[in-house]
Amino acid sequence: MESRNTFAEGVRTIITSADSMLKLSGAVLVLTAILTTVLPPLGSYLKAASSWRFGTKGLLKYEVGQPVSEVSAVKPTSAGNLYLLRGGGRKFDDLKFGDILQSKGPNRFRENNGCGMKKDTDCVTTSPEIFKLHVGECVVVLNVQNADSGDDDADFVSKDGGWVYVATTPCGLFD
Image 1 (cartoon, rainbow, N blue to C red):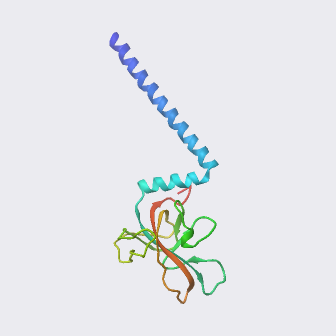
Image 2: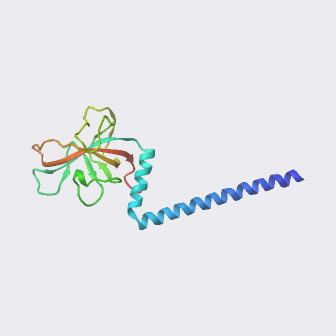
C-alpha cells in the first residue's frame, strides 16, 4: 500500500512540474508576442537570430539600379534578383541587420570565400555555390559585406550593390 502512495506522489510531482513548465512557456510566448508588437524591431532581431541559428548561411549579391526605360525608383538588377521587403531606401548602404530579401529569380547562394567586412572586395562569383534560391524564397540580412557593383549597362544605370551575408528564412507570417 505504501508503494502505491509513493508512486502516486511521484506522478503528482511530475504532473505539477509539467504544468508549471507549460505555464512558464505560455507566459514567455505571450510576453514575446506583446514585446514584438510594441517594439517591432525586436521581431526582426528574433527572426534574424533564429534564422542565423537554424537557417542555411551564405553570401548573395544584392544589386539595384535605375532601369533605362523608366524614370521610377531603383529596382533589382539581374545580378541581384532580390527585393527588399520594407519601405525606405533600397541602396546597398541602406541594408541593415534583420532586413528580409525576397528572390525575384534564380540567385546563387554562395559560401563565404574570403569576403571581408567593408574593405576592397574579396568576394568572387567563382566562390562555391551552396544552392540556388528560387522565385519567392527569402533570406534575412545578417551582415553587409563588401560594396561591389558592376558597371552600368544597356538595361540599368546608376547601379549600386554588393555582397551580403544572409540566412534562409520564411518570407512572412503564413509561410
